[in-house]
Amino acid sequence: MNIDQIGNEFDIIFIGSGMGSLCTASLLAQSYGKKILILEKHFQPGGFTHEFQRKQGKYHWDVGIHYVGDMQDDGLCRKISDKITRKKVQWKRMAEPFERLIFPSVSFDIYGDPEKFKADLKNKFPEETEAIERYFKDIKKTSNLFGKSIMMRLAPPPLDSLTGLLGESNIVTLKEYLDANFSSQELKGILAAQWGDYGLPPSKVAFAMHATLVQHYLNGGYYPIGGAGKIFDAVEPIIEEFGGAVLSSVEVKEILIKDGKTVGVKAKALRGEESERDFYAPIVVSCAGAYPTYTKLIPESYPIPFRKGLKDFYNKEKMTTSLCLYLGLSESPAQFGFKGENYWIFSSSDHDQNFSERNDWVGSDGEIPNLYLSFPSLKNPEAKNHTMDAITFTDYDHFIPWKSEPWKRRGEEYKQLKDKIIERILSTLESRFPGITKIVDYAELSTPITNEHFTSHPDGAIYGLACVPERYKKEECPWFNVRTPIEGLYLTGADAASPGVAGAMMGGLAAALAIAGNAELLKELRN
Image 1 (cartoon, rainbow, N blue to C red):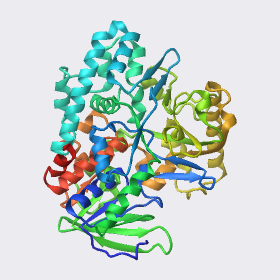
Image 2 (cartoon, rainbow, N blue to C red):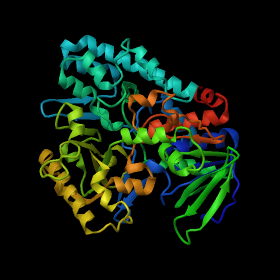
Image 3 (cartoon, rainbow, N blue to C red):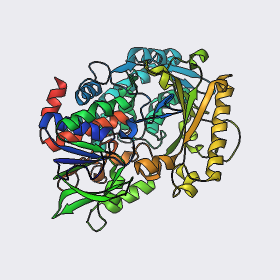
């Protein structure tokens, strides 16, 4: 279906087809019969839940879902997933341990059992037993407050309520918490090792964000059986059932506003004749992120009181960006001892140092200092061929010279840079797991400008706006609210809650509650 084959009036229009949109749209279609239009810039809908394939469909990768927590039967994320997909998506628990942390002087395995996690930490660091007990209590109460605020207030809790929970008004960041409670640098490194899941080191990230993430994974990691693409495949028929549609390769250029109210969007087809068309709805929900929504999609002529503040926030705390090497393997990686767990490989237990060195390796030789490894084919029982992902962080600036070049046609110098990075990642993998490069049949590197091209996220950042403490100062950072200053315009996705697919899902629920104007959806999910 193309842009000219459908009507132009809907109940709700969604900008982007990521998890936030899919969640909000499915809930509102099922519970309130809403006729919905979802417009997606990428040719493959699903946002960071979509899949792609290479070598005539031999190898499949998910671009954003590496693992998700809280998918046990009684988990809220599982209940939301079951509701929005009508239980069409099943989740497989990852092999245990589901996280393997590797530092120069210590290794540690994380199991999806909070009591075992706690006991293993105490056994390794007996002198820190009391602090470890306190840590898990602080994680739980901080995370509970965060979740309750998202559900009841449709926004993260204010910063002062979070710091008050810890009994220390001067503890705001993760680093401040760790330094105040623990002596061992190795233990601090272990507790903060999942920082790659929100993209900021301990000195920058709010303790509240860290607490929410740790609590999310306490009961293990899960992976969608059949791959992440099953999520969109399950939601699209629900949208269509209520008269709605999903259009891909269609970019929203502007949110239409009349007399202070949202009335629709101006969209452009990115294929064929590239025709433009206006679509109308009294409600528009943006899953494009707060920054693109307020600085690009809302006309500059329309007054947004905090537009400058948002730009200043973004420029001050830009999210780190990543490189992902997608590998197709001729044989199973299980022969090297992998069972489907994640590997976090660090050059130091000091994650602020790891973060500060994220750019140093690009122009030098030798091993990549920090890597995250994922094995989609070992997580997915329906995979027919084997795959692997290797991810590392570095800044967008290295790729700016090619940002305006068309996808897959960025020239020889860009290709040479990518080839060098691929070679170095493979060399690093070979040094740690001898023989593994012999089974590499296909390799493709994704850079920040690829992410920017398809998502319109500034600098190709994968996690939205930074989860620094200022994010939780509602009066200073109102752009994180689900509701916007424009009547009928709402935000969904990660910027409406927290980073990652599960965070975007929670943002989706918050947006649905705001639009519905009551808590009936929440009661349905809890029952």
